[in-house]
Amino acid sequence: MRDFLIAIYEKFLRSVAQIPSNTVTTWRNDVFPLSLWLLLALSILMAILFYFFYNRLYSSYNSFGSWFRTFLLNGFLTGLVSFIIAYSAFSKAFKPVLTLSLWYAVLNLLYGFVLFFVLSLIFKWFSTNGRKTPF
Image (cartoon, rainbow, N blue to C red; front, top):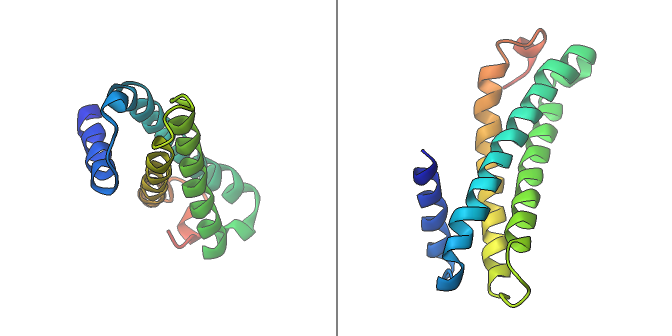
């Protein structure tokens, strides 16, 4: 599974920009696995907070607007964290990595959106007020 997700990351990055050959091992060994785990952890944490904490305490969190704000916050947090991980993994000598880091952040932002949506479809049935939320 890990190799499959790393292959997806590499395929996307190679389609938008050229990965420098001296950075491939750093991407595969350091950046991809760490940001993948943080993507999963942040998305699960945001879904749990939304459905089991805020939804239970505040009835105003049952609206589409609050779900959408949490959806956007999750995506932007995963994108920001993945950019920080990717950019800090390389020394300042690798300036071409900045473009790759930005594209990688966009990819993780999209993955964060998709993962939060899927987790919302699952967690809504286990939350007390989740059945009233749109997703």
